[in-house]
Length: 137
Figure 1 (cartoon, helix red, strand yellow):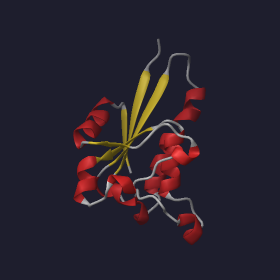
Figure 2 (spheres, rainbow, N blue to C red):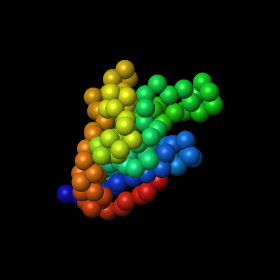
Figure 3 (spheres, rainbow, N blue to C red):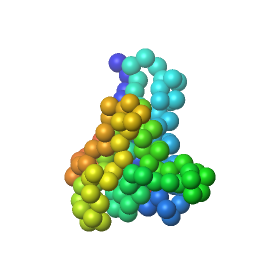
Figure 4 (cartoon, rainbow, N blue to C red):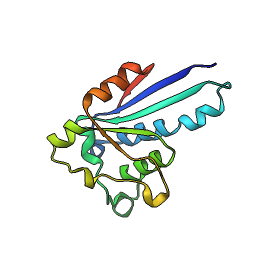
């Protein structure tokens, strides 16, 4: 049986300050491409986590394409959910910034079964500890 390589992508900066947050989502989604190159039984399991100011750009209803001609963080999040990526949102940071859970996007309209997971920071910390590679964005 092969290895299960766990990866943690940690978004800690707001999306409006640069492109790195969207890149984290894109990199996390790309795990499906990597799986094509693996041997039977080998797995790559990414977890995308939003902490600190990283939670600030997660509201649904973004108009980035209309306003700036670029895809929004919301669109990237929906794609991540569509490919069954685990996406953790820090519960404490949502509370800190006064962001209600019902303002967060989902991908039901795209047919995704996966949902954003609002979790305590301890669960995100555990995902980081279990990951072979942790990347901060």
